[in-house]
Image (cartoon, rainbow, N blue to C red; front, side, top):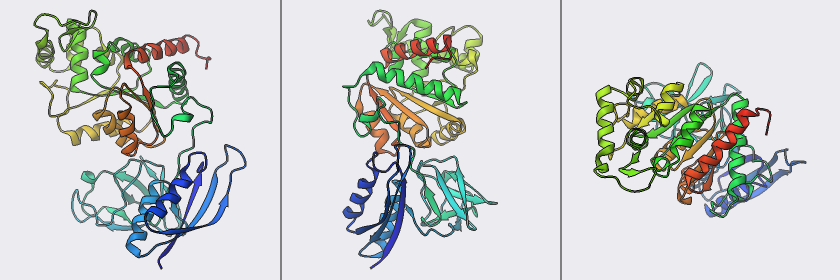
Length: 410
């Protein structure tokens, strides 16, 4: 009977990771024996479990080991990583190791080497004693690509502090949470990230503008609380429409009522931005004087506008090649410590795919399904706040402004 021994370490008890791993083994039709189990003495100390797995056949064992790797279970006797050359540009060897977003190391000539830029659904290329994640389309013929799970180990992220306002919502997203405490927690994490020199990423959907949340987000940009903005053609267009016409999709932001002939306002601003050549040129020329996009231009905050098939125009700044857009986004996430996903589903999930599990990610949306989708697609660190994004941003920016006025406050 094929057997394999795996080890999992970290906060595996309070996170319920250990029972999840044991359930996964049984559901695969295998059996297990816990050969060693050491419990951390304090809440800060990691626990360690060594588990021997008995499988009915080798293919079942291989698939199970790969599944357990996603949960942080590593082969106990790994050996060096195996590599094979990529057979062609954009093509990986069969049996390539598919990455998670967890911190990852590979064993090369007896030494564990950290993998640069952890990102899910990529390959690992090793070169001159180093290792890095590479998306499939970036692999070049002959690149040495890691295959199989041997010689690869991942780390389970540290459990969030016990007693935090999110501690009881690790598995479920519910609207019945104390919003004031949640907003204060997000403001605290942003301030800590800023103090540690880490960046803050905002992903914004059109609903931020529709619900009247854009002025608060504009204040956050002006206050230096946003280091990069990811969005789509819709958000950028409606933000500019609100700045120029005071409407969003033809509806007055102030009165909440449709205005005469307002249905074409978004097309008219797109046309004017295209006439200027770019959003930056339109801001410099004085056509756009306020709004989130104008604040980004004035403050030198980079933004990435990724296009989709339903875009009007699009704006000249919109990157219509989604593969290129993802590559540009990758370049901006390397030093991010906190990510805010604001009423955005598609761009939020796309961003979640690029972020390491170590990036604290907060998903703010009226629908709990968005945070659930993020977690289901591998962004397990995403925490959901089910609320209207506009009042959330109003409260958040007030707290952040207060911190800027009293930088020592926590």
